[in-house]
Length: 370
Image (tube, rainbow, N blue to C red; front, top):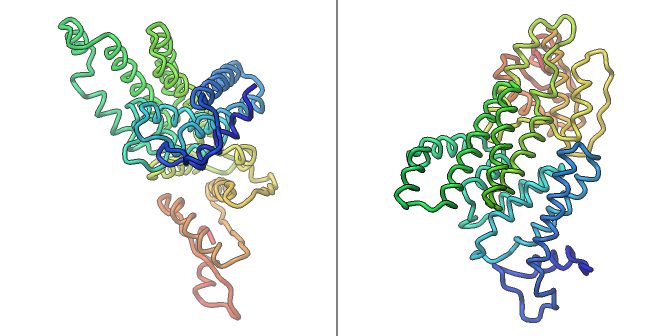
């Protein structure tokens, strides 16, 4: 019935520029925009419901990937004048992210436009997807400290007919979104589950209010935000990385706290583990577990190695990393120095030569990580 809807949507996205389709383009359907939106939202709602009811992940993740494809086809190379382009983009990016395709979510969010047309709540979701937690904190503080967003100010403006009901509801719901994300951000910083639970409870209330008020766009943003922070918390390093170190690791708790703080405070916060890393991360805490990780390039092997190094260093043992290429050794050295240097551990590299240099011998004897 849909007549290869996604294929038509993707074809149109390829050939159009700023919303304009070439005159000699094949007929792609006059209702293509509404069909893509309906299909995307139908899948998104069904998959979020299945996820919230702890259904089979392989099913709802596959559905969310299709939803992301539909929303991306809807907005890519679309008209810069379309008022809903920011909203549809966030729906697509969130669908990709929850499906486990973070790179696609990042790419769709990051597409360059002079005016991405994000509402404040949509911008908050964009910051979260991009892991720009500093900007998210700044946005939240600016919104929450604005006197016009205070409850009493909203009440007075309503009484004076200076604000209509829909705009008042939008302010209240956007304020709740920012409050929730502020609690969640603090939970990511501290590892305390109570802050995550508070964020979820705030969004649950906001979701009911948005539904009762008929605030459709904000209802979607709030529901997506709720699922995003729940998904992020489940895969967060605080949640996954055991607080109990192996025997003879007296410094593990302190090193773990500093390790997570270093990753959290980066420009693009590294707060969670990817699906490809989760199983290995849970085993990396056991120094007696011989672990072989076989993953493609850029799939997260270095982070697993860092977790193994964290445990090893906490046992006051040293770490030796062997790589097949000098360029890879240099890259790995930079990565480990950036992570473990702030923790007080020394890192050095040996690149191999015809003989043994005195500096090489010194590194082998003295460095924490070689």
